[in-house]
Each structure stands twice: as structure tokens, then as C-alpha cells.
Length: 532
Image (cartoon, rainbow, N blue to C red):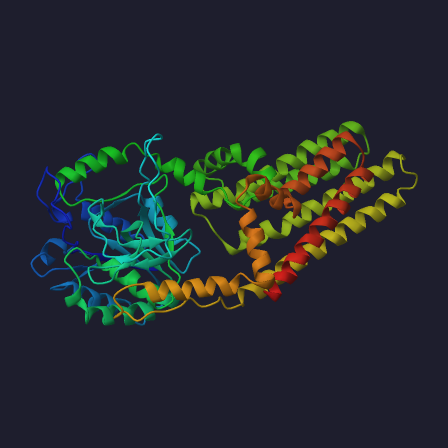
């Protein structure tokens, strides 16, 4: 379960509110175009209840009555300091993950799901500053290097919120307030924040410490902004997430809600959910020759009630049929086997996509998928070796059987190395981030410590690995690195192509040579990462 806390007291405006309507409580804002015309708060509360049967709403005493519902609980708070203390009380000692949302949020279900299922221990939703288009004939503006830039109290506004966050590529670097200055802020924290249970004690501690400093903050400082400030300065790596192809807005008036609903209607939430069902780290062959259409098979299967395990059984059946076709030793048998193994792999991808699209996950399914991937592959090896023997093309077939056993042993060792390294790497403690006391008014000491950390991590073996990682920004290098490790998509493609156009001996030689290169590359990388 995920514990949910809704913040019912939005920050004050940093600039004059836009024309077109007075601010209103989300409980009084009607979402007129939605079925039943629920209030913005009722819709969000229904989304929260799907995660937490008793979500907590923190609200001002004068507004608390508007937030009371038969389910959930309302905690009254008079000011930001009270909000922070109430939040600390709500999460201290909790054994569940935590999701914090502004009560005026209008958000897609899928975006909530993706935030709560992120692998990072802490994730905040942000929007970055848009790059300004400049006249091509105008001379470029000279920008002071960030190392020489002075911290500032950000006054720019994005969607009614102050731009006081410095975001890097993958995490929040620094956060500011009306008191805390930030070096070159470039993003805004929109409000949603998800935390793993292991960070909740730290959250409770910084919330209470920030509550004692509340007199230093401005009315525009958001509770989420303050919390992320505290977490970052305590050395917690807070990842960042943009809205991408999903919708999120904070609606503060009826006019804003009507405009947001119109904008929201232009988003295809189901397509975003379907795209999210496809793993982003797949190999070259899977990305360009399978996932381009397999997601639509997954949606079709999910809407007709097929379970991931049933799709896995289809994949297994196709794999065994492929092995049987290869074992005939005929040219048409080889072609049929190649087609069948391709579609066995397609359905191997579809089962995971069905699980992610339909939210049907299980230990049995994960075990079946991992186990029978190897089973199908090795069954095909046997089918190819039997076919080579039956055809008589290679005498008694002893040489082909030897190649088959070498290919099988090589692949087994490679999988053993992958799983063992993965288990060992999960136990490796991450390098801690620098910390900074909350009373320090600007982030220069934090940035200096981060720079020293970066320099120390860019030497020796670690520096070599960092350089290789940076090379992945170039698309040819990125896909070459994906292919060289010989993932399952590339292996099944190699089997299908070489078996259909050549013979089993060529197939096994391809698997051994490419697999040997992959094993050498992988083992080298594992050793270097272990030493780094």
C-alpha cells in the first residue's frame, strides 16, 4: 500500500493572479465535463483511495469542513509550520511508501501510477524552464559559467509557482525558498512527491526542522518545495520526472479548471499507458522489429481478458513448435522454425506488456517468463541439432551437437554471471551525496561539495566508465552497446535468420562467436564496475 497525503492549503501567489476567476477551494471547483461533474477534490480523493483507503488531507481550520468525507481523515493546520508538523506526524513510523499531492491537482491516473511505481527512492514532478528562442541575427548573450554564477532568490514564475529549483539530468540538485538562494534555478516543483518508506524518517525530521524555520519563508513557498529542499540537503537523491505525454495541473479557480479540462481532453491517456507498457531499455531488434506493434497485440489481449501467464504459454507453445520444425532437417522446416521462433519472441514481449498494461503482476508470472525463456531457447538448440543429424548433411551430426552444447554452456554461464552480478550489485551501498545545514542561506557550499564529489569520481576506473557512459549519448554508440551484449531479441533474430538462410552449423557458430564477444564485453564491464 502507498500512504497518501493531500495538501489542502495551496501557497500564496508570487505574482498577481491571472484574470478570469477568484481562487476557490478544490472542493468547490466543479469538473463539469466529467461524468457526474465531481469536484476537483472529490476526483483526486477517489484516485487517492485507490492507493490508500484512508488518505490524509491537511487543511486550514476554516476550510476543514469542506474537505470532510465519509472516507479519509482531515487534519487541521493553521499555517505552513503546522502543515509540516502534521505531515511529520502522519508519516513517522510508517511502513508504507508515501505520495504527497496538492489537493487542487487535476491529474491523470496513469501519471500517478508511473510516479508511484518509479524505481527511484524519491521522485518529484517538475516542469523545466522553456528555452527562449532567439533571433538568429542577434548576437548571442554571454552567459556566466555556472561555477561563477551567484545564488539567487528566483522571481520567475511557471504555472503560478516560483522557479526556485535547480534540476540536473536525473535528480534535483538544489532547491530555494524566499530565504534560501539557488544557483541558476531552471525548474519548478509542481507538487507531487513520492518517497520510499526508507526515506520517511528523514522526511519527518526535516519537516519538523523546517517548521521551526517557517518565519523565514514567504507565502509563495510550497510545502513540497520545502520538503524537497530538506531532503536534498540531507543527502537524499530526489529523482525528477516530467509530465511527458500525461496531464497535470493545479487548478485554483473554476475558470482554470474549465481551461484545464479542455486541455486534458487533448491527451490520450490510454496511449500513454500503452507506451509505458513497453520497456524503455529494450535492445535494438526488440525496439525496432517487435515493440513497434506488439503493444497493440498486448492491448487487444488485455481487453479480451487474457492473462500474462496465458500469453506466456502461447510463447512457450510457439517455441516448442519452432524446435519441432527445426528438427525435421528440411529447408521448409527451417523456414517455418524461423517464423515460429520470431513469433515466440513477439509473444514473449507481449506477456510483459499485458502485465504492465493491465496491472496484472505476480511472482508466478515473473518466474515462468524468466525460466521458460531459457527453456524455449535450449529446446530450439536441440531441435536444430536434431535437424542437422536427420538431414545427413553433417554426417552423424556429432560436430553440430558439440557446437550446440558449447552454445548452450556459453549462454548458461553468461546468464549466471548476469544474475550473480545483479544480486551483488544490489547490496552495494551508493556513494553518499553531500549534505548542507538547512540554516545556510545559499547553496554554494553544496555545489562546491558536489563538484568535489564529481571530480573524485571521474578518476581511474570510475572515470573510464563515466567516459563510456557519456559515449552512449550518440545514438550509433547507444545501439551498438545494446547489441554487443547479445540480448534475447538479437539471439532469436540470429537463430531465425541463419537457420532460414544457411544451416544449423552456421547458426551455432554465430551464437558462439557473438556470444563469446558478449560474454567478454560483459565480464570486463562487471570487473571494472566491481573495482570502481
